[in-house]
Figure 1 (spheres, one colour):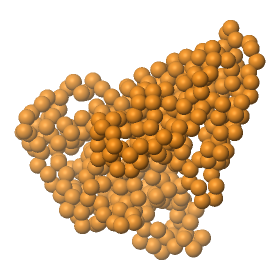
Figure 2 (cartoon, rainbow, N blue to C red):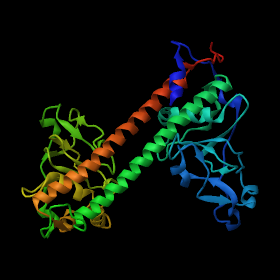
Figure 3 (cartoon, rainbow, N blue to C red):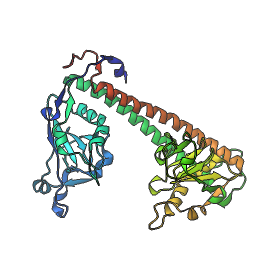
Figure 4 (spheres, one colour):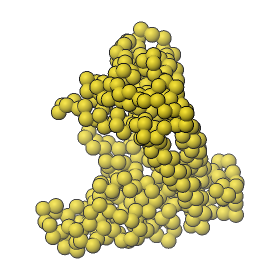
Length: 405
């Protein structure tokens, strides 16, 4: 991170751009015949759409599938050398990686083997910075893709290789910071998950509490609010929470909109309600409302009953037990959780005082997670800012004249 302080700002200065094909050899891939068993499960690693989750992490070393030399010989697939940069051009447009070892790829990828004038990590980070552009120019009615003509004409800024490597190392340092923070977040989330399992089941009791818990159906903790409103009939500055505003699995609100321009019916919530995404793909979206407003009707608005603590309900909704029952509430053709099933979920309920105490312990865990999330967001924002400066030549590294000075 200290490298950030070793840069200087030169207003209006950018490197000249060159066609990528001039400084790297472009290639692609192919899929051998899936019906020929002898073409598969060989010792040639083959990157496919199944490996999308491995992308955007720098090096890619493992693949879900592999092909044989026979599969290679009887298809248009080729083996690309270690260090080549790959880019997904459809079904996950803009994801990239650097090959750790010789590998083949499917036809969904573009591949560049960099020449002596281009550092492969500089290319990787430059492609990372272009994700929004790749998404913008992609086209297709079913699966969006980027045509080959685009890559034939693609140009990149080109400082001297020494400066490319210095820039790349700065991004590697930032990525290491981001990865370490992500590991800390995962660790803290696992600890909190264990606390929820222990404290909400009564297996572990907090000091000073010994009274018996009672088993009640979930509907005793919360009522399902069904109030709906046409957003055109309320002031435009009312806060609107959509599914994309709630961060999955963390209970964090990432933002909100206003009802200005909204036309579909919205659900009404108030401070202290718990919002829970009832769609199959959004079961881990939940938020304890910190203000009143309206939200997508794809949320359940759960209002705590008078004898229960709002935050305790929020942690019940976050528990694996609740998620599993909500998931199991689907019918064959129902992509949403079924309230008639979820409301009967048996819950072990302590006294309001113990609910409050449990909620405080879990809130402390949330506070620690919140601080880590803030650091992680800051590191990611810093990386974006560095991309705008260092990959354009607006900010130059000290002692590097390059081809722009």
